[in-house]
Image (tube, rainbow, N blue to C red):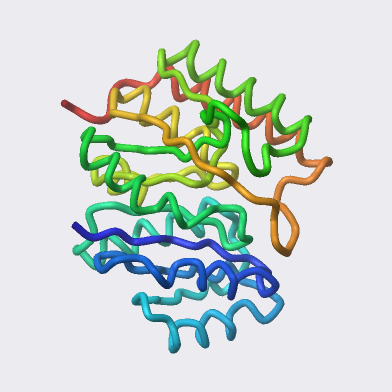
Length: 243
């Protein structure tokens, strides 16, 4: 069993070293890929330096220009497909929000339950812990959770979470076709619509340790409309995965 941890990174020089340090105690079978998404700060050179000193195998890919989170993550899926040795691909943020303690449990849950997609949810714990996102974003998260549930029957609590582990049936498709921007709800809905097996794992998330979020206030309306329309259009397509 092997898993590739994909870290999309755009101008994350403040947090990247701490994020990689949090992965150093992982057991064998895990490898890391940092996708430098056309950063204009020192993210690229720092990633190369971290690759030379990391105990866990760490690879670096540099995109020539900033292409967005969707392209950066898809680069990770394409890397996994080209290498041909990974069973799972895990998306893991560079900014320190994701907690490495849940990486092994996430893969174990996928193995034990035969999941195609496991999402780390900050809202599943009986007692909320860690960073629960801002109030306005929680409204958006609940909206997408209800929309996805209504259109697919898949119950989720954290559809925008970027902390997720994809099995072969999901990530091999994502290597070929993946949403360009704000991909998490759309990719989740695609899995649910195609009757892939999806579940969530309770996780604790932290506040961003550096850098700036890609979703600003001015982009919030575009984000809601664009993702909603993409999900609605996807709903009318025929099944693309056979059982």
